Length: 294
Ligand SMILES: C[S@@+](CC[C@H](N)C(=O)[O-])C[C@H]1O[C@@H](n2cnc3c(N)ncnc32)[C@H](O)[C@@H]1O
Image (cartoon, rainbow, N blue to C red; front, side):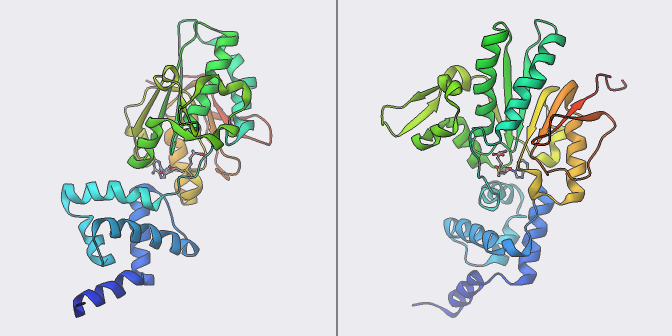
């Protein structure tokens, strides 16, 4: 029989009132930078409920308090964050950005970088891996064509551990194969089940996935990068914060390094060390060639 306490708890579970919603929004923003506007309340509530069902919680407030309970709270937060962030992604999601790298940036980089230097790219907010694999599939083909001795590596980061597990597995349903241009499908293999494909080991080995919060990217042990690809992440951040995040990414770029954002993702942002490159279909910046002052 349902006790009074349980029925109150169930009612609490059913309704996230405005004050509680604000509290959750603040927590998410403090910890990830992501903001949830009021019209996205159902998204936040659904994500919370899903995780609370998994953990047997019935009250939003009790669950909230548990997230501050030392290491246990930190572990629970790591699971919850996956339910509160948007992971939608595709292979070659924004083709003009890939073409900009391939046709405009790469030839110049190959001319200027010493022959033994390898190329390093970063995919920020990589979700389930498609963005990082798109870069790798393209670089694999293009470097083999014009500079076969060049090596490359991709680091891909996200705040969601669950997304990273899928990214590392590198297996995708067959219908997603159509997202990959035919010229870049050489790096995938069809699986015996006939329903899925996988990124080949030789490419997977070139990609390192890591759980890094973009808010702390400047402190992450990342090497200086030639390409930073950051699309469809900053759109979830408050405008004021986007500039700080972009400034931090600039600090991770090599001279002549390329920062590729999604069109419209950095309104009004500029940086003394960066200049806009590419056409109107893309939003990309090249870092100037002067090194940081020591
Ligand atoms: C919509 S997906 C974008 C995926 C991919 N970049 C693309 O454009 O297809 C946004 C990703 O950003 C991640 N994300 C959100 N806040 C983050 C943060 N503070 N640090 C790192 N990743 C974050 C989410 O977990 C999610 O996987």
